Amino acid sequence: MSNIKIIPLGGVRENGKNLYVIESGEDLFVLDCGLMYPEDELFGIDAVIPDFSYLLENKERIAGVFLSHGHEDAIGALPYFLDVFNVPVFGSELTIELAKLFVKESSRGNKFDDYHVIDEHTEIDFHGNSVKFFRTTHTIPDSMGISVKTAEGNIVYTGNFKFDQSASEIYRTDFAQITEIGKEGVLALLSDSNEAESVVENVSDKRVQEEVLDIFQDTNSRIIVAAVASNILRIQQVLNAAHQSGRKVFITGRNLEAIIKTAMDLDKLTLPDEHLITPVDKIDQYDDEQILILETGASGEPIKTLNRMASGSHGQVNIKPGDLVFIATSPSTAMEVTVAETENLIYRAGATVKHISDNMKASGHGTPNDLQLMINLLRPQYFVPIQGEYRMLAAHADLANETGISNSNIFILGNGDVLDYQKGKMTQTGQVPADNTLIDGIGIGDIGNIVLRDRRLLSEDGIFVAVVTIDRKKKTIVSGPHIVTRGFVFVKESQDLINESNSIVKEVVRKNLEHNDFDWGSIKQDIREELGNQLFKKTRRRPIILPVIMEVNQNRRFN
Image 1 (tube, rainbow, N blue to C red):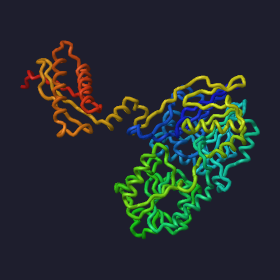
Image 2 (cartoon, one colour):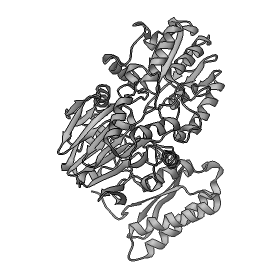
Image 3 (tube, rainbow, N blue to C red):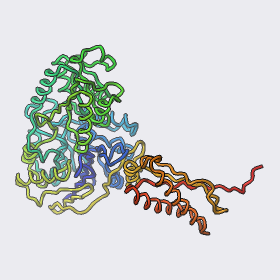
Image 4 (cartoon, one colour):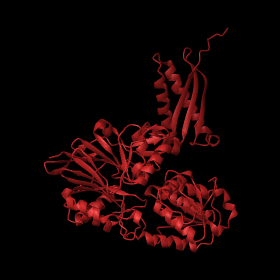
């Protein structure tokens, strides 16, 4: 009987950063390799990727990386992964091309070229195990679910999915293949939980297309559409509606242009009119009712770019009175405050806002009926809800229980938890390292909690610098203290506080100079403690305190 393990290294109790490890015998299968964009408290961090420590310990066993679709939450960490590992990468045609594009733009892993294009007919054998794929419906073409066939049954990973009976051919779910996998026997199902809490079912994408067209036709001003670049389905709907309403499309952002070109080259996105897209520098040649501006922003998040448009600092196109801003994406919960602030700026600029979610549910993730249908088609022995915050996983677990799966066979895991199947029983047996790896510029994992704490303090309470020059041999202060503050207090209106701080620094330095065992670390720490206590007592704030102690020798002679 084979030893089987299921280990999420990312993607549970969070949104994004999907990476799931399936172990069967000597083979280790990596399902997706995604990133997560940071929430506000991760100051200055560009992205968050999974911890590869466990994979490094078992790198010789990795059979390959198997990608479900081409969004950043599934492929975004691949450039960093390929910097470390040299294993084959498998995915559908569009997914592989977008993965290559992502790797190229990151300037990492450029020498890697072991990509393999698969489709729903592909089955790959690995030492008694095999991997095959099935088509699913998502907001990007060529989305796939993945089934790892082991001696004990299939382990199925849905990826991101929903069901839409009216989906076009390139987005259509293969129900027959899902049913066939279920008949073979499913040991465990790892299923998307993003919309498990929803009390409203998704409308069909055909209905969404009609709604977008109605909005465009009822608007006599410029329309600015905020969409996620890799949401090819929404981009196609916008292009179709722009063509039907007689508008030219002006694209801002190089990322969108690259993704559009890739999708068009593969016939995964079609232009209703080859002259539909117009360079943004020609926008002044058209009347407002002929203009549609498509904005996707940076890092897959257009809302922050809308903020710059509304405040007049975009650089290409700014919002003006009369514009309609159509938000054709569902921002993450971490962006709720930013969305509210941005909407306020848009209205102050004289424009109005509409959301695609105002009149309908238009998610790319399955709602409760979809989730239970997937469970009933596959009939797994064990169920693992993934992809979502804890409350979403718990809601999905309840849905699974309603279909007849025992609570004892449902596992709500955390990142790094190990599910072990031995002797006919699945149990949670331990943990492996699965911390967040933070990406900051070219730095990978070199930003820790102390740095983030200092960045938070700087953003909230500022910095307080005390500069002193001493002569250690004469045990005297030669110059200073000089106080410099940024983001803490306005110096001209806080002179008493500055004078008190000068006195404290002088006294601390004087006491330390009197000791025969003078220590640089001790004098700086004493200044931080004494100043910190005084500043908090006076202001109830805790700035970063930076003592700068310089030494001179006044007896030194120069010839």
